[in-house]
Length: 132
Image 1 (cartoon, rainbow, N blue to C red):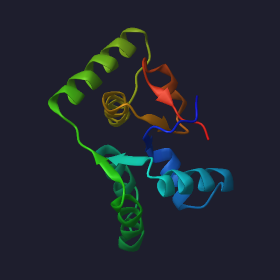
Image 2 (cartoon, rainbow, N blue to C red):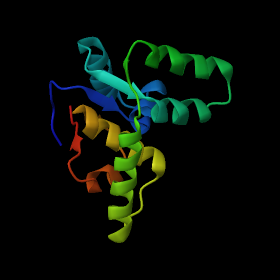
Image 3 (cartoon, rainbow, N blue to C red):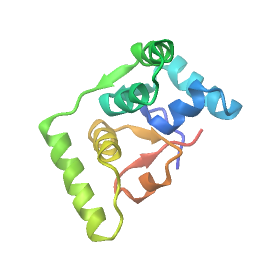
Image 4 (cartoon, rainbow, N blue to C red):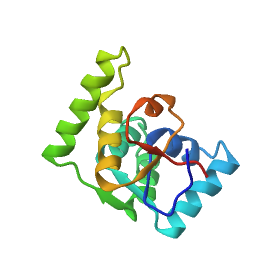
């Protein structure tokens, strides 16, 4: 894990903790990533966050939080790379959910680190993990 001046894709587990104000250190780190312009997002993170909230006001808070961030778009190559990594990990006996494979593939493709609480990201080759 590393701190970096490169873009940081803030993964769903971090956003959930941040939005529910569960950890002051994490709150400060996310706030600083946003303030510095390093924070980026993607469709998989937005989908996971919005689908996890049934209340419209909570969904609106999510959209507001993500709205000012640079958005990373999946390309055909992103999907293929996610599939390749998934197949490689499955062959080693380690399955990772498809949204997380996409998030990792996007981060690698765009030279971003990932800020996450999910330890399965540690298994993904060539992925940089962010630590404040």
